Image (tube, rainbow, N blue to C red):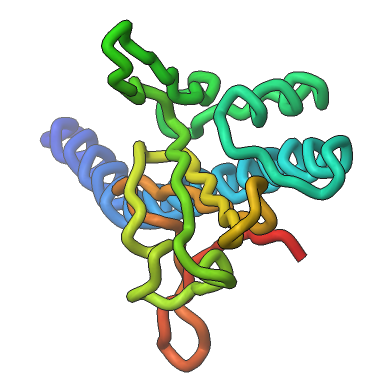
Length: 183
């Protein structure tokens, strides 16, 4: 005697919906973690290109996107943004006939540090914490000591889904940025 076959179908639909509601937050968290770790891996790929450049240039670090790109291509590596699923683009620097410089587009932010060891700072009020970029993008900062003409230190930052630097909360509850620096 089947009086309510519709009730059985409704129960199955409700169970599937309940499983979806319970599983969605874990899926979102897992996806966020995967993207963050992919960005962190991309930071190491960029670090390899920067270190390769320094090895070939008597310890000086690159100060332009083109210098980094050259050594990245020599490594045969491609950096893919986990959010856009496209290869990371470096900014284009355009100099007009009047001498104006424009930095256009790209997923990599290139900037300079003002003080020695500034690249090592990982607290939430540091220069590194104020840099913003495209979600899944990277930032490369370098330091040229006063009186010198070449970069002697660098820091590499990766950006999360909100375009903020990747960071973790340590056991004491303090936020620490993930920054790769020269040793």
